[in-house]
Image 1 (tube, rainbow, N blue to C red):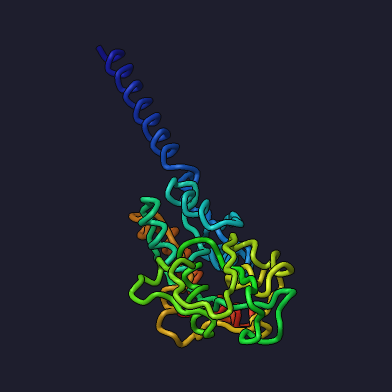
Image 2 (tube, one colour):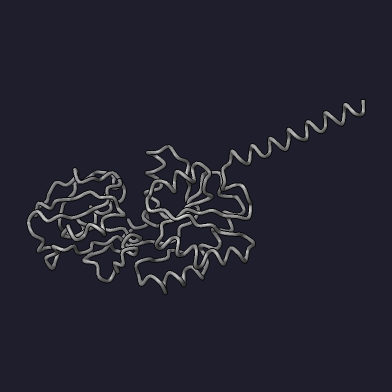
Length: 279
């Protein structure tokens, strides 16, 4: 009888361990070690901030940070949703909200970190001022929803186009242009590619991180967003996690390190106004 009880107990213990292993596996690689934090990020400035400042801070707390770099705006969100990453740091509030709505994901911003002014940069056929652009000049804008809207709003601010009133800001596309006196050719391109297409454009409206990656400095921009505009709040770059994971101890440690005075000082000393901390 004792032998039978021991056998049953051993089997139960084996099943329990197997169940625990299966649960860990199902959660994805991001959950495998409670002291390893895996974060997806755009190369500049996000991965730089994480590697150069946040990583050593987390080591002080007993955590190891692994940064996975991405060139696009889709995969890092899908990776968090699928538990392949603990968090990501690359996107602004409006893009995150739009991604959840269109993709059915469950991502949540847990820290408001910095703002990158959107700016217009000169192409090879730039004529010296936006007002003197030639008829039919080509202007590159991002082709993803929220960033295209942001680019078009900047062009409107500069008096180049007029947009249809009453359209939700994040839903604006070039089809909502109601006045285009210079017949500008609005060329929709992947955000990451606009800087490389500048030689074939009169100008390009470029995200701050991609401008930095291509050595475009904010002070050399033709025009940029007004940092005091209330609308810029929706473009603050955030630390995002899967909804429900925000109270995980390693996420709390990551948030603390990312919102540290060391990060603020690094942003000020490194990016010359192309990145502005908001904490």
